[in-house]
Length: 162
Image (cartoon, rainbow, N blue to C red; front, top):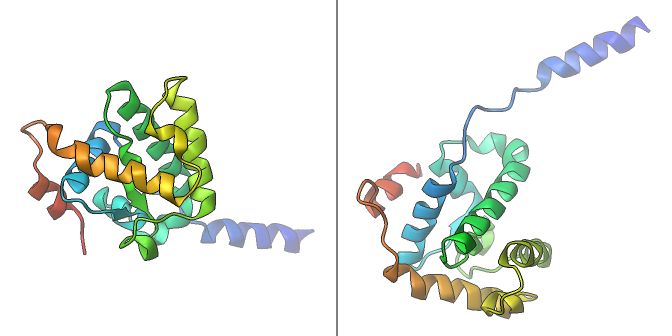
């Protein structure tokens, strides 16, 4: 019995506490908008680096990041922005902007949840073609959306550590 207690205590000591950080929806929207204006995708890791979250904390923040990107999606619909969270992709798919089918399914569920019953290009996101249509919508719409003057694209790019 005492051995079990010692093992648990040792295991608990190995666990690191969750890092202190806070995702901000408006800041994320502005950052993703700056990426869209440059017609580039951003990886999940780069997105976390923007918030200065260490790479080794990825397993801890992964579910929080997905939840945050869904809230960004909701914010985009409420403010008539394109769904900017579709620009965040896996690191090895950054050049093509592709996502796994699992990610597309999650995105599709979030789109249907926040979009409501209106008919729009987001209705078609069931595969890679639908995803690319949404990503192109972000790239084409971004130049028409202005970022407040307290932020600019250079500031966002400087915040991403290499």
